Length: 97
Image (tube, rainbow, N blue to C red):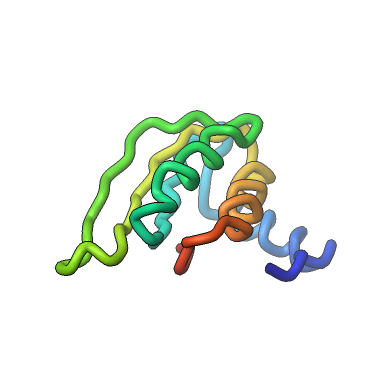
């Protein structure tokens, strides 16, 4: 994963703040291989200022991957980007939304 430049990070934070209230709820969607599920959930929960409220799973027909909808309570917009950075480094993550 390529690190985000300072200008890109500031633009992303401005967009997040314009569309979400912090502290508040934010839902991450992550598509992963089944063996990465626990690592992804643990990584999200480990980010400072992030509390996992609810996890919904949707498995592919052949159970080759699982889509996770992880609802969190976040203190600030910066923590959204921190979660994406941490999750993006994990093996078995196919995509994040």
